[in-house]
Length: 487
Image (cartoon, rainbow, N blue to C red):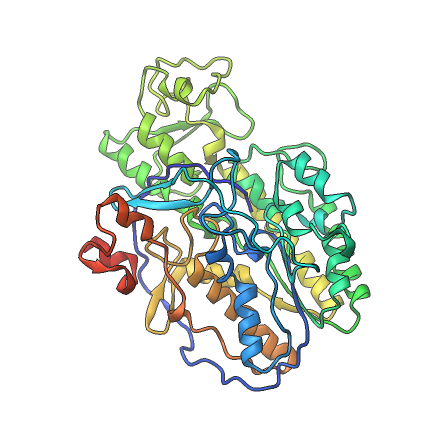
């Protein structure tokens, strides 16, 4: 998934209606989970990345660590599940002097920003062996196979996480080598998300690393790489129990579904005018237009686009360009109303247009077909995250008497960056893995009790309203569903 998110997000708050019922009663733990070493492989989802950063209090609630705890409760003898912790407030972003983690600073808007504080440190960096959690934020399927030196990769990609996770070079300079060296008898493998999500979150402007085009990883390249990855993992660990997960629909996450309705309501209030936007590859005048009324073919506006719409929509002074330092493309007339005139359109990078959406959807379908076939070939369990999250988006999910949805913030499943799961979302994902493990391998592992996991962290909000113990009259300890703060 994308490593860094924009600083300020102002978004609408809405709740889904309806819901599907999960089995609230956890499966009884027994000693049938006969596992001696568990290793997780993946990207930021696996690393426990939340709210635009990697930080220990979130990593501890990442789905791999939650699975590890449930394994231990089921009498598995895996020992300590070692994680490449980055102490709170977490990792840095594009500014290496500041932590990139987003926090909730006000209920108005809501106002979500970084705190501008120094980043944390890598507290488990000197572990004298490879980590059990080998999730590397920003990694694509190619990175599992790549044998190049990881320090150079961190430098060339401006991504500190390769060096952070793979720092124990004596175990090998690749995820595959380090996983093999640990000799696990249980492996979870969740890669491929970034091969399409990087394209989508950039509004279709990011290029892939294979042919330099503004597309997801070509399916013709993804398929042989994924097959090679899983085949080589099986060859390296012939007796290991493997569980893989597929790729969710990009339209199922609030990064894409939150802003459009809000902008559409604003356009309707201005007399039913249209948003004019740049379609894929356009740098000057925009050929796209929509009232964002929910009609078929409407574009998706990304969460960072909320800030742009709020601050600049309709502006005739060129403030978007002067404030962001972006140079207007040829043919743009900055004294036309920003975003509501074809000669001063809403920028392509904040819009996933219908053609880009179709491209992303087709890639996810092709990738998931590959993943399913590779799982079958290598006798791996398959976690169908795609179907699961499409169901959550449509109907929500009820666990332990609480309903969760795919809505931004109030739905409680996604963190403040709108892409990565919250701790509760990670727990629900862990349970999807556990269900597959129990069915595939005959385990009887108890599911994670979601009610014990923290919600979105509101601690930073307290200092901004001048009260370190309560928010809106509620104790921080008793603060559970975010919606209660709106009553």
